[in-house]
Every structure is written in structure tokens, then in C-alpha cells.
Image (cartoon, rainbow, N blue to C red):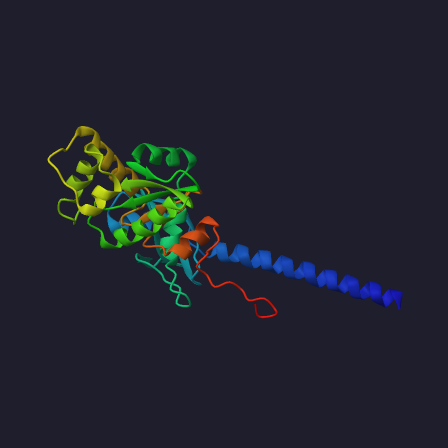
Length: 267
């Protein structure tokens, strides 16, 4: 009986180790199905006729597609290719089950802010709301309607001591006069109220101009092209309005608005 038990355990271990071996082999084969970096570099240059540098190539979340990380004019971007490098694909891939933009997530992770870059954000901050909680850098434009909705949420959280809000101004090029508004708000020290009211003056001081232009240049290099954008202490960023409960979840805060769990006795 004991001998049979030993044999069963030995058989189980053999099966387990064999499964692990084949799993590792399968992963290696998956990685090997992507074209080489050198091959893709040549294909990218020939196709786009631009000075695009291929950083890395790896299997994507989509079977049969490889993710190509590239740098173009100082910006890190994502392309996709097939296993034979016959096609180069630009654009976003969405997960149909939950609508997640996996390309956007990959770009944000690729462009994560380093500790030194987080310090750079401090220099570009135009004003701060709140003095408690985790620091959140908030990138906004005075003419962006979605930003106003997002600003209200994070400003209320900052006033409640749930976060420290650091504002950076990022006027979009298609918003006429937005850049001048941003510079005026900085030069005349008008804060969030001036941002909301559409404040604009003739005061276009050099300090204001420099701060706005440096913010645009720096954030664009990090792959940020839209507002509102939130930058967190771990270096990750999110573009698009976050609801209050999503912000609290991201910051590890308890959501008081969520329905409380009922006890066993129904109280």
C-alpha cells in the first residue's frame, strides 16, 4: 500500500514538472513567433519613410499580433505587426468584453514617469489645492468642457483632505485663445477660479509663456495629447474623466457613497 502511495506521488510530480516544462516551452515559442527587432526596424523605415526607432517587440494581448514599441520625435508609441511582418498596424485595440483600450494602457505604461520626471512636474505646477493626502497632478485646458467636470470632482476631494491637487496647464492647439488664457492665469495668479471663469488679460509675461510651453513640450514627449489627464505618484497616468469612486479606488480611499453591506440580521 505504501509503495503504491509513493508511486502515485512520484507520478503526480512527474506530471507536474512535465506540465511546467511544456508551459515554459510554449511561452518561449510564443515570443519566438515575433519578427526580430532588426527586421521590424527595416520594415518601419521602408513603410513610413520617417526616422522611427524600434525600441522593443513582444507578443501582444491579441493572439497572432506582436506589439512594437517605437520612439518617434521623442515620443514613445505602439504599433502592431503580424508574425511574418507582412503588415504594420497603427491605431487602438479595444477589449470587447469591457471596452478597455489596451493600446492606450500600453502607451501609458511605456511612458510612465520616472522619479526625476515627477520632480519636473513640480516645476511645471501652476497652483495647488489641498495639503493632505496623495499628490495627484492634474493636466487641464481652460476651454475643455470635460476638464471642468473633472476639476470639480478632484477639487472637492482636495478640499476634503483626500488628495493634494497640483494643476498643470496644457492648452490644446485647436482651442483658440486657450494658450493666452493659461498664460494670463499664471501671470496674474488667478488660480482655479480664473481658470473656470475663462479669465484672460493682456499680461503675457515671460514666466507664464515659458511654463506653458515647457509643459506642452514635456508632456507631449511622454505621450500625453489630450485633457483631462491625471498623473499619479507611481508614474502612471490616465487621460479622460475619472468618476469620484474611480479616483478613490485608484488612491486606495474608502468610497463613502457606496452602499454599505448589510449585516446578517438585516440591520
